[in-house]
Length: 480
Ligand code: NAD
Image: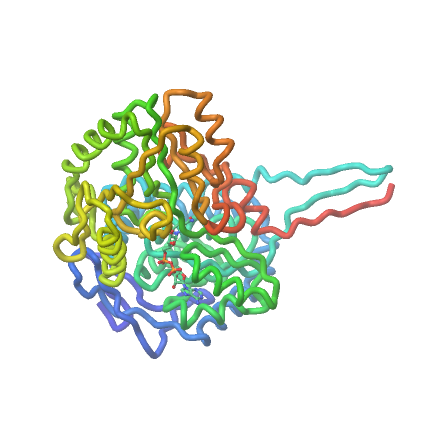
């Protein structure tokens, strides 16, 4: 450990920014704390508008060279980054678990392989992007996908490197340069990614990372006139602020925001599958934007469904996320825990009943919770809790199910459990949601569009949709 590094489980992490291919320290630092045991991990450079400015300047300077780099070479370098992620997968997994408290086994087997896959997928997709031609009265219309410029990418703490790579990979593939601002609660794996990118041979200034609080470096990034795109994943209030900052420059935004997604369980469903899907919503201690936190069950099977659900919930093991046997780890921060408990206690005071949980656990853990007797217009049904808290309501008809499911200001996802394909088609057609899962959850092809409707977001990313956002599409019309 030196003045500018810290060590997590034997892995050395640089605590400085990564700007223009160099490490740069701020005068001030902020403290990074592990949600696993509340231990201080170390001090991280606390960015200021000056470092934000320097990072945008570095991205701007590197842009012409990277944009002019042949597609095949850009793709090769992104594959080299993926190789580096795979080589350091164990290190990334333990560092991420220490930093955000999500399960080590998920990081090992799901998340970090997906990080590598994000780089490979967008590298390969870049090579398939066509140059379309149309003809009008003898004139050719030639469509090209031009890089847009420096992109600002702002990410949350619940899936830090996954989210970062989901944005960095297509932005870089498209020929843009990037300034990433990781969440201040989880700064570490982004710093490791900077090392990996440098080792892979990514030119200086193509990827820049500024650490720090959104309130301190955010505005300098999101209101910068040299920034061509802003891609943000996080909460609705922050999105509103960023949109206002971007508005004077009319900087295009991609916003991936919160959710309050429903899980509809119809009487014709396989109830074991439905109960499995419902318990899955506790994954990552409920800190998943896509989580189906509102369970809506057809009245005739509600009792049986609840019985199967509670039996499964009772088997969940809550504890140290580094332990392979653990199902639910800690929540990210004491402040978040207070927020979760506030939601639950207010719901209970308003007449809700805790069928499962309803309390804080030891340390930074919250008991997986299921609340019934909740009103549709209550806070607990309408607001995103972002913790292991689910509600259960019943319905009698398909119409009522759709009405309850859709009565929300969000529109990120919906999950259906039903034995009827016709019903699934009917209900899906009526729901407002970026993703609908039928008898499954969380599976998704990266070619498909991802994003939210209503206040769950603006725009879609994934496959061609990512390139749509990160490119300036140009139509060149040539006379015969
Ligand atoms: P948040 O909005 O508090 O913070 C997200 C990021 O924004 C952080 O990096 C933060 O530092 C930064 N930020 C804060 N203020 C800023 C400012 N003024 N300018 C620029 N950046 C600023 O959200 P969070 O608590 O970290 O994340 C949880 C939220 O993210 C939940 O609502 C969740 O549903 C959502 N989320 C959505 C998706 C999705 O894909 N739709 C995925 C994961 C999380």
